[in-house]
Image 1: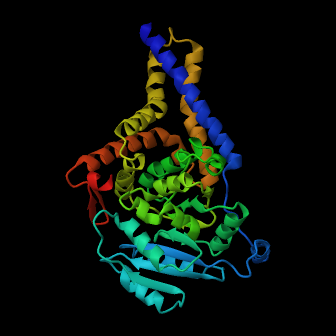
Image 2 (image 1 turned 135 degrees about the horizontal axis):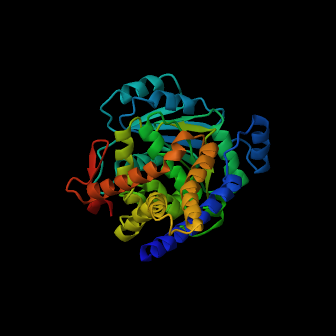
Image 3 (image 1 turned 60 degrees about the vertical axis):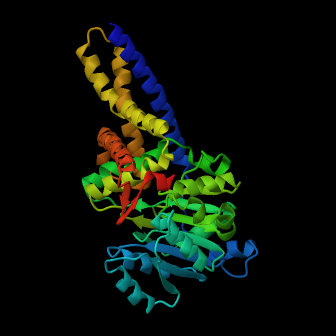
Length: 399
């Protein structure tokens, strides 16, 4: 009977927390900002209304290291933007595949495409951060768009992003792209990012709140005003941080600047990883680092994943075994606790065009997320440190 009392209290607590997450998700259905397509006429009127005689000059900056799989499609989507005042600069970060050859050929086709060669990585820098820093020094734009080499962009992307910038008087825009997921490993693991964006943080509060803790970002797309980027210290302020996007967003808030995290699924497309192993390792690289290597906080995060999304299944089994002693209300709430994450996933999948079938496997997503977290800890505390794209980063170097 004592076991039943304890598990009943746990069931109620889980229910209370999940209801809060469901409420946030329902709020985000209506308030999650979306990057809207802008036609040329309305864009021209918007530019004029803000005192510009021509479109603000934008520098699109792309760090590329061994990206032969998608680099051509990415750069073509950028150089063919329906925007009349921009440049594209790509940094070939010592690639050992065909990335350099592809970029060289493309630079001969497009006059506003410039290729620069990456230098040797200085001590104390993460590779991508140094590449972005180098690109920022080469850029001439009033606005800087950092985007990954595995993204593909709608031709209206620049006009749409610039419109949002001006309409909401922002200093920084980041977005959630459409994530193409083919393997089941991708479909199960990657949506955990969307789940955290969608169920844990009211989207409109990111823009309204001045607190650095109320921020989120995606390194696949980071669009700054030059003034804002300079004010926060650029990528140099996060030079040794492997999860630079999250901490750049915090710096934006710390400096009193305005930012927005938006739904960009109609404007930017990406296949982040191509297999289960790539996905598992990619998330292992980032997960613990994303918590600033705060072990107690990270441990609580992994523990909460187990309690909210895995434990309810075991509690249902236990309460079913003790059926004659278990009040009906506990069984009902137990099944609701299993249903709520699935409902959130289904709603989220509709908004971000994700796999609906994978929504019913959220318990598996939670299991793998915990496994990735443990692997992230293992990598961080190992002698080799975190490994990514042929480089090793020790925890000491990243702190």
